[in-house]
Length: 128
Image (cartoon, rainbow, N blue to C red; front, side, top):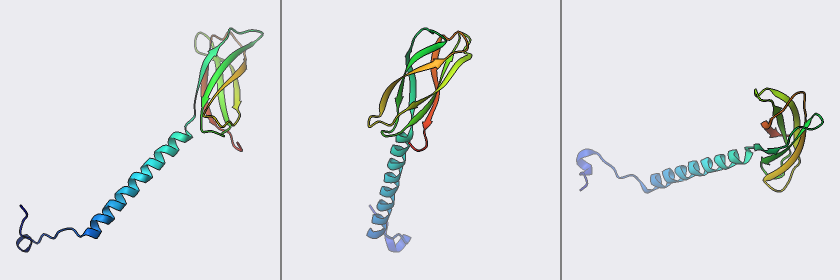
């Protein structure tokens, strides 16, 4: 049951006001979806899949990098000892590829007894 408009001063919302409000709501939803999709595309994820025992002062490792296709990425890869102290470090350049996922081998020069490898960070490389 509706209230008498003449008694309470109520007015039914105009059709154009409802259309404008719906349009603004739709624009906000589309903007949020675009923002989230671009933010997730820009993310770079990398991790060490495997590594081998050190030989001749180096440690070989296999690194997986997931990033936006056709993006050159630079990752800092470190080797650590039992106390988690960095005993080797190198920069891994992952070339552009049409695929999101790349698996790359790297050799890390050591200055101590390494037991594990990790990726400390990756970022898009300028010009790539």
